[in-house]
Every structure is written in C-alpha cells, then in structure tokens.
Length: 322
Ligand SMILES: [Zn+2]
Image 1 (spheres, rainbow, N blue to C red):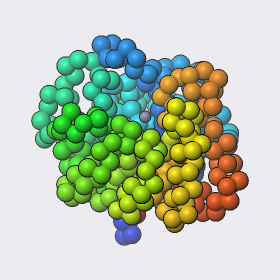
Image 2: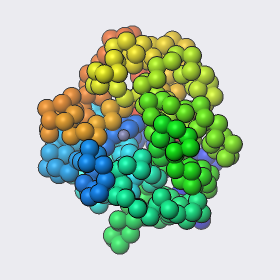
Image 3: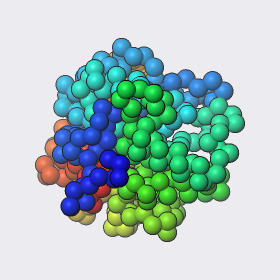
C-alpha cells in the first residue's frame, strides 16, 4: 500500500504538501483557492494569467506568512502553467505550506492539441492517480518528488462543452485515492449538476469543493448545497464587478446564521499578477489573514466559525474527514 492511502483508524490522512505530508491540524489559516506560480503557455489564450516573478512571489508569500497565513491550495493543474519545482522552492523559502493539484483546467489555458484532451478516461485516471500517489510529472526525476494533494477540475459554461473524459477520470481517481476535488464553476453554473454527477460516481459530497459560488449569490441554493454536504468556496472580495458588499458578505452572513459555516471556505484566487501586493500593489495574499479576517470578527461571527471558514474546513476535507 502506498503512503497516499495510509490512514489512521478514524479515517484521517495526512495532508500532502509540496514539501511532504503534514497533519491537517498544522495547516493554520489556509487560502482554499489561490495561485502562486503560472508559467506562460505558448499557444494558449493570450489573456491567460502568468505569475512568474520569482523574487516578488517569495516576498508576497512571506507577507502572507508574517500576517498569519499558514497554507494555501495552488489551483493550477499540470500542462497549463503549473511548475511544482517552483512551488517546492517557494514553499521552502517562505514557510508557507503549499498544496499542489493534479487535474485539468479550462481548455483555453492549454496549447492547442494538448494530449490530455484527446486521451481516454482510463489514461487520464492513471495520470491523475500517479500525480496523487507518486509524483507530479515535472518533479518525477527529483530526489524529492512532489505529489498532488488534491484534484482541481474546471467546468465550462455548458455541461456538454466540459471535458467529459476528464470528469470521469477525476471521479475515478478521487474514488481510488479518497482525494478532494475542487471544481471550477463558471460563475456558479452547473453546481447542482456536478454535485449529483460525482455522487452518482460514488464520491462523498464531503470530497467536493464548488469554487466561485459567490458569483451566483442565490441564498437558497447555497443552503441546499451545503446541506447536501459539499464545501462552497467564495473569493470575490476584491472583484468589484461582482459587488462583494451586497453579495459575498451577505452570503457569508446568511450561511453563518443558518449554522452552515462548516460548508464555506474563503479564498482570494489571485491568478492575476495585478492583485498581488508585491507585483501590482493589489490587496495581496495577506488580505485573507488580515482585512478579511478582521471584518469577520467585526461582524460578530464566532471564533470557531471564522476558524472553519479560514482554513479549518478545507484542512479537514484534505485529510478525508467530514
Ligand atoms: Zn483559480
């Protein structure tokens, strides 16, 4: 049995960071969806974000760490800019636990004809599983190969345009390894559909994180999805076009009042370099443990609910609990 499926009697597994396994209790404040490195991809959408200013990214991560940030999930899968050798170095240099992913992003972020999109579900399953249990492709020959800590996948706006063999493969690899699946939704679209799809494919709702759900601020839907058992990720704090004051912050309030803070994970999703403090003088990664946390405190939300939304929930799910 390989170490990825090792678990204790209560079912918990260690969390696989880029520097190795750690207990979930060590993650601390954890940004549930972010980006700390994206290599440029020749042939991909020219508007695709790039994050490759090594020194500034280290400085940004150090600011995050100094502000009380402990960990983050890097949501760039292989083939569209992930560079796990960089993630390894960035984590070592900053002290931030980084959890890397396997899986697939929206097709426009890859060079035309990328092999993954013509492969069979079986081959894609093997690839995802290998990255979870053995090594991320680009670190295969390293003395300390990096493993993926979760699966990140992306839906397109329409179900039929989404990468079906990839969905099947993600379900199978998550089933085999017990891994968490973070699902990019297009502004919350297809959330109900994808939750049911994975349940039909033998995953527990506890293995699912629906991303960018605050772009679809329907309070009834959020309550229903939370009761179903999935984790809802919100991240439009610094995106004025999504009116975070009236939507995101109200959603947080509603979910806490409904007793569902266990089903919310907060993040800042700063794929655009301009959102970094050290690169674009933006709010920066450190906004989560500072500004955002302070506002939650000011709202009168209990310490335990804040702890859940700022990392506790995602940590437990990475460990296979809940
Ligand atoms: Zn993202």
